[in-house]
Length: 374
Image (cartoon, rainbow, N blue to C red):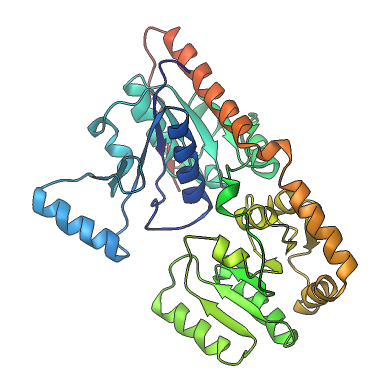
């Protein structure tokens, strides 16, 4: 990787600390691992005005007449703008780039014009919404780069949509940030929003009054959603609502079973995080979540009624032999080669090296055609 020191990550999804989600956490941990290897990572991302961080940044930048902000609080430069894909030429030129979810074609076109080699790395399915000149994007419209995906599910959807292969590299986890000795005994549900199955989780908690639950905030809740949730939780004395935690070990220390009734997942990061501490997961048979859970839990039809989920939870909760079997399987599964950080880094950096080699073989790189999202 000589010559590829400065690695840029792009996304149109706001980065930490504005949003804590799978993509953001993966990018952050990836950057920290690259720093350990002597690289200089940076992130170009969208600035949201939906929280105090964004408002403060907006006011500061307007005072200084800037359309692009930069902060180093995470240990690496994070460049933020309302339309970051238009600001590629305003940041220090990277040696290579990893283009992630959100406006990937636009980023690819801008970086191609600067002669920066890049690969694409999908953590979701936004590629299914790409359009070109008002029509659904075709294979010929895609940026001529190498693609990676976070799961077999994501890679399969990409392949069926565009008849192109994507290398599978699951999200990166710094296991020491999640592994803990457990002291509490709760069923834990993280991120009480509709997409993550909050209605189902509430129904299961109501059906299992003998089991204590912890609901942990994740994505920001608007005022109406927050009050609806609080009104429903008021009727459930066995459920406690916790504020979002940046230190997930605090959550997993008190977790006996993790409930992940998501309605859409391309991986399901919390399942893998829980496995590092031997915590079994009960999750939906949807998207890439079964890949994340594997043998380390129970997988339920997402359309199954709450009674089925409650029965699965009680079985895992009260059957000590089953629990120990699934707990050991979860811990073992967390150590599989696919989640070996060094291996994952090697695969993605090798992709960047191939992109750089291909770039050097051409005297110029034709910019990709402009592709927009529907």
